[in-house]
Length: 142
Image 1 (cartoon, rainbow, N blue to C red):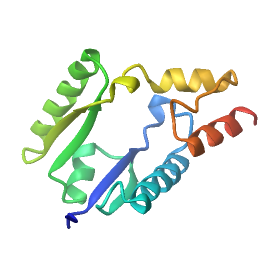
Image 2: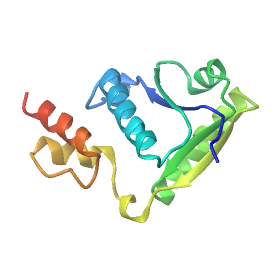
Image 3: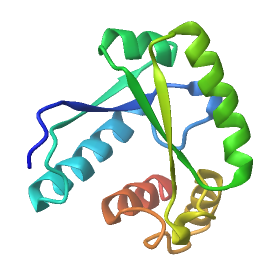
């Protein structure tokens, strides 16, 4: 059964977090990966990928979103995610947050570890999609 609603993946333009790749590169990579999922039939819902530089609640309002889906790797993630969900609910009372647990083999994967392994030329192919690994390694050799 095909779902008729539209899904949007949001990429934050948060320079304060010191992203390894700029927002447009992350958008392009995410678009390529989501398109591959749709082309393979693994996802049967249209997915838009957009960046934003405002409050997530403002972006959600602009997109007419009613649900935010966030991933959790460990209990330590839950505490901060719960706080963010509470603030988002206070700012936008109709917005709900749903938490999904990461697959067991991905519980330990954190962007800081992926970036460090890539910077030292290590193999990150089991941690990120192949095209992401290629872009990250190319960036490290600049």
